[in-house]
Image (cartoon, rainbow, N blue to C red; front, top):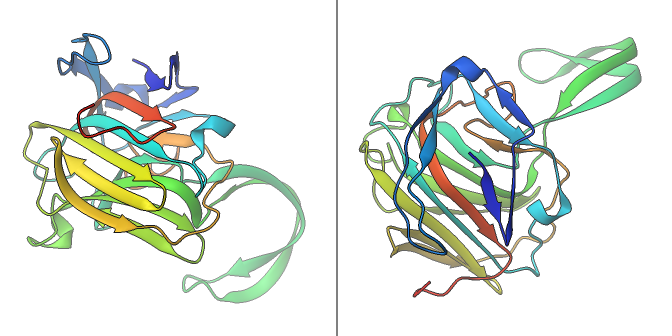
Length: 239
């Protein structure tokens, strides 16, 4: 399996928890060329990651198109949150830190400081150019199964949510386009949401993760992905 980007393809750099990944028959597509290979499936505690590349970011002055097929069960196996991550550039990055670090309690309050001679830590971010997730059954019947697309500059989060559940064990084609400041979300070529973007600097240097929010399987997905494509232009309705 691979990820299509513009006119070339690249392989994921990390395939975590391989026993929880599986292959199955993929969808048949005819553009830009015919394909009917295999899709990748996730069983909750797994992820696929590729390291940061500049071309995987989309700034506010860039148009883009995301296109992929997703097949989701009615219920998710991981319900530590009300959502499960499908595709994300939001997750953590690993950094080596030194010196005095805050020691927090379970409420996020600093209760002391401690010296750290050297440590590798996971650092999360609220700045991300794209993030796809789905509401699971713990979100309630109104939202369960709805897909959400998000972008954030750390202060403003712009999100679009499908008008209905897409979690029915059937392949669904998801497209998100950006033209100037206009974002649009489509399911099976039908427009579900559109809105203007007001964020400023959403880019980061984090990994691109599939099937979870980070390589530690946070908010891991149960479901399948196929024919993932990213373009640095806004595709037309016809295409």
